[in-house]
Length: 297
Image 1 (cartoon, rainbow, N blue to C red):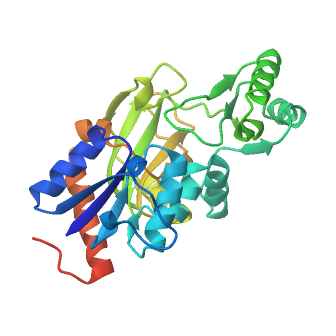
Image 2: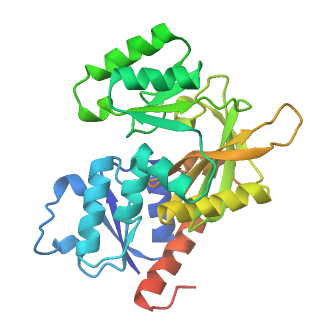
């Protein structure tokens, strides 16, 4: 199998994938998107004879556009541009989850400081203000007072970029000091971990402690539904437990985000399964279904 890896930087996650692919004797074409030109009239040579390409671009805009080109060149791509566009934009992400009947935090979108402040006051304090595009918990704010709300809204309004003038206001979910990251392939969990921190942000990138997490039937159901809601693929699905106290089971879960270029190095360190191995198993099956070729044994 010949696999193209779209990237702008090779991180630990990509190294894990590359190592697994090469151990299985797959031919890997590393494609640094920063060094390519993508013609609307035809594919660059690096796309020749590829069975499948895997998008691992850090940049959201590059990810969306380069996967559009891969599709235009008639090369199967994981994840496709439709999935990337939904997952990369928190507004589209939230709408997709709601339309699919997946519980997700109550959210307002406003386009002026005044209307955003009205939403914040309606939610009450604390509530959360997020950028519509972003990852690793950056530029997120927990708002504890009207004074803080006014200051943050003013700051965002003067940053200049149009995305900062889209105010994504969300209820604050009182989670039990952790959230849950699930790596899934077309809705089937590969592994899951809890990310715990004393800080309200529990991203692994922010230094949260990680440990394995066993998904119950309800969590499994929501992972499958959330994956389908955004179009499926190789996804990171983030859940928070609702109505849980110490030594008790959650009343339910809420899915606050689905990620399309998911990192999994932290998960691989705590999981009981070989995460990159499971991912490559799935990639082989996807390439086989697209080409009709036999999957290597």
